[in-house]
Image (cartoon, rainbow, N blue to C red):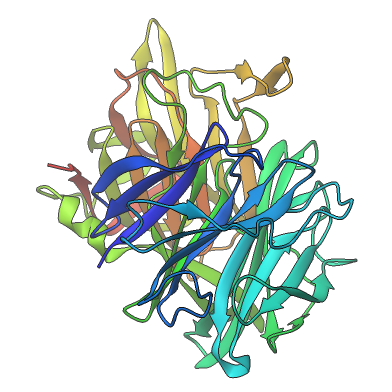
Amino acid sequence: GEYHLFHQQDGTWAHAVSSDMVHWERLGTALGHDTLGLAMSGSCVDDGANTSGLVPGGGMVAIYTSTEGGEAQSLAYSTDRGRSWRRYDGNPVIPNEGRKDFRDPKVFWHEPTRSWVMVVSLGDRIAVYRSGDLRSWTHASDFGEGKGSHAAMWECPDLFLLDDVSTDQTRWVLTTSIGDNAETHGSTAQYFIGDFDGFTFFPEDDRVRFTDAGQDFYAAQTFEKVEGRRIWLGWMGNWAYPYSMPTKGWKNQMSIPRELTLTTRDGVRVLLQQPVRELNALRGRATDVGGLSATDTTTGLGTGRVVELDLTLDVSRASDAWLGLCRGQVDGTLQEVRVGVLPGKGIFYLDRTAGGLATVPGRDGGTAQFALRREVAYRPVDGKVRLHVHVDNSSVEVFVDDGAPVGSLLVFNDPRAQELVLGAKGTAKVISGAVTPLSLQ
């Protein structure tokens, strides 16, 4: 009856619970430091059958990376719905054995082979381990050599089944994040689609597929068995500037939860992401903006910094069509974040170069570029594009058409920058859509 979110906080597991993935209650620290060092990233399973022998009557088992003596995989368990935790006396359950990077275990039950499966980062690849009891593990396979992007080390893997809504086929999806690198101006994430037999992952092609077109979506992990849905959320941040947000009272945030499916376009399977329906409960009174247009100018759509825009645009007569968000004159300078399309060039873009923040302190004592523009290939069908946007005080998340591509950006425009506009070179028109304020109250 609860969603459990565990996140990194100074090498410990902070803990929060929610009934709807929207309203969260913070609990105490789940896993602090112990004799095996830090409690780094990992995952948690419901061992209802007590396969581990640690939770009579059923309970939760956390699988995490400990650090003393090198990164290794360890267990903790809870029999009171995660309110208190005990470390397993036999930790680590998978020792380091000389590995440099060995972390972020994601564990799930694989019913066809009646085994627990772990995918874990091993530097430049993902290792697969198997267990019948969560305590004794055997290595099954590795994946990654010559596959995907290797711009930096791989982290925080996940492996899960998804339905292809266009073909009624089911496929396995393997996701992994990619650390800070010059090629993508920071960190990013990618995914692979294929088959999995409980031992080995077999990709269906060699395409490089990035998870997010923006700059700030990393280490996403999924909830399973959620009324038949597969839902994830990720860290809205970047390893180019992980600890240097210009905020007070907090340093980082999670994305909004997203429901995942697959579809096939032009013979290529792609991941779809959509905001979960539970977010609809936050909506206030919508303003219909259907029929508004912009020709070589901008047209106002309203104001707000905690707002949802869901618009279908006719961009067939535009060379550039965009939404200007978090916009306004601040001390004589226009601040604005743009999300838009270049229809003739086949591009979707996110642009915070006018966001009021050029650089931020980097992770190694230098500076990191924050005023970035990101572009990915995208071509509107029949000259139409749907832009479904969630704007929060410090973030923008954009879902294009039926959920691909998707773009996520942190934004730190001045709080006075509240305007929302439609802009175009040429003519862009709102075929249908609304602007809706959001509130947690």
